[in-house]
Image 1: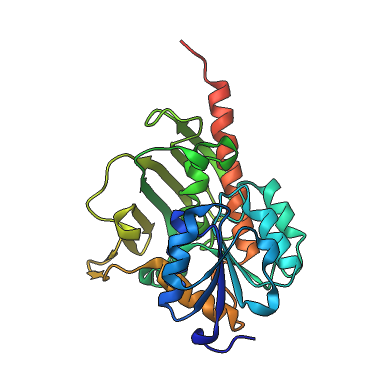
Image 2: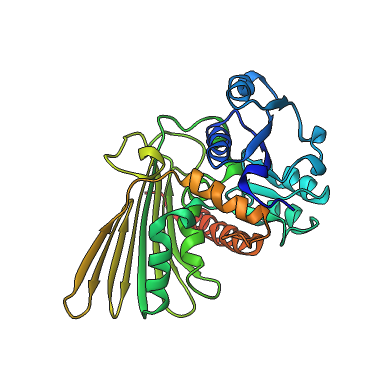
Length: 328
C-alpha cells in the first residue's frame, strides 16, 4: 500500500482532454509521480513530455503492481466499462463524475470487483472549503428548501457533450448539485416537475434544465442547470463554472455563491466568509492520495449511483412533460 504522496504512482486515462490534463497536472503538483498517460492519439504527447510520463494507447498495457491509482477522465458513456475492467484487474481507480450516464451504464460497474472499496468518484464540490461548513450547518437545521443555480461556460456544445446518450447538461453539470444535495437528505426524492430546452445552442441534448424535487422528509430541491455561451464575472474552476446554493431553514438561511458564504440567523445575526479561489482538481488529488493510503473517499460508488438514479428520474420527467405538451 502507498504510504506517502511522493511515492504514489498515477496513470491518467484520457489525458488529452480538458479534465484529464487538469487531473494529470494536479497530481503532479500534489507530489505524486504521474508515470503514464493513456491517450489513443497524439493529443497527449506534449503533456507526457511536460510531466516526464510514458504515453500508452490503451489501458491494456497498465499493470497494477506498477501503479497506486488510475484516473479515468473520458466521456461518461465510455467510463464504466473501462473502470470495471481496471477494478477487476486489481487497480484502485478515481473516475470522473458521474459514475455513468444512466443507471443502466452503472450496472456494469456494480458487478466489478472491489467497486465499494477501490473506486472513488470525482465530485469536486466536496473539495471546496465551503462544502463542509454547509453540510454541518444543514445537519443541525430544519431545512425547508434548497435552490441551486449551476452554470458552466461553453462556447459550443459539440463533441461528446452533444451525444444524446451522455444525457445533456443535467448529467454533465447539474449532477454535481444533485449528488451534493442528495448526500444531505435521506430517501429517494420525488420529481415534481422538470422542463428542458435546447434553444441556447440548438444541439440534440438538453442544454437548459429546471427541475423541482421533494425528499421524503419534505425538503424541496429546485435545480437550474445550463451551459452558457457567456463567461460570468466569477466562478469555480478558473471562472468556468458559476454555482449558487441557497438553503432555507426554519432557523435561518445560508447562501453559498462560488467562493463566498453568507449566513442569516433567524433572530438577526448575520455573518459571511470569503474563501480564496482554489484549484478543486488539486484539492481532489490530495484527497485521492489519502484514498490510495486506505481512507474512504468522499463519494463512494453507492452515493454516486444514487445521484445518477435521481438524474435519470429528472430526465424521464422532462421527456414525459415534452410528450404531454399539446401544440397550439
